[in-house]
Length: 143
Image (cartoon, rainbow, N blue to C red; front, top):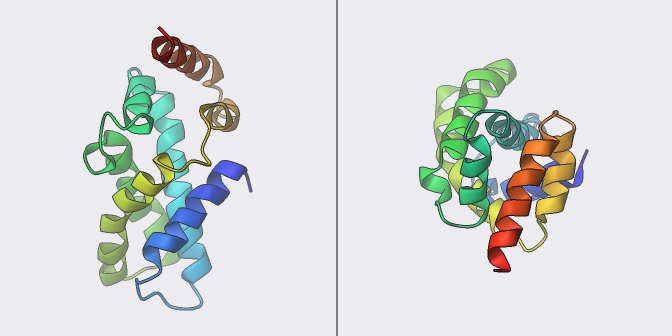
């Protein structure tokens, strides 16, 4: 597992600790939340305007609760992962509203570095777009 997905999963454990999950599915659900969020980041990065959405989210200019990245993560979890795990609607309804909190903790983490995110998303073939966006973002910070 990568550093980024490990960090997302760590934040998911923190946020979802109070959600009652069947013991036999707890690890899979936490992994599913992590996969949903990372999948949303990768999918967003590959879309036109997606890099801007990620920059807005990771710089705090857009809250996790209103970000399309978060909405996509919730959709990925509920339509793909939760169904594969056979989760009940009650469990899905308890977890999906927590995804913005996981993303908020992840994006505000002092452990996350734009370069790490770029390196991880590089594996999905959108590295040049992210590098350009990160360069623009960093250049804007030092003006």
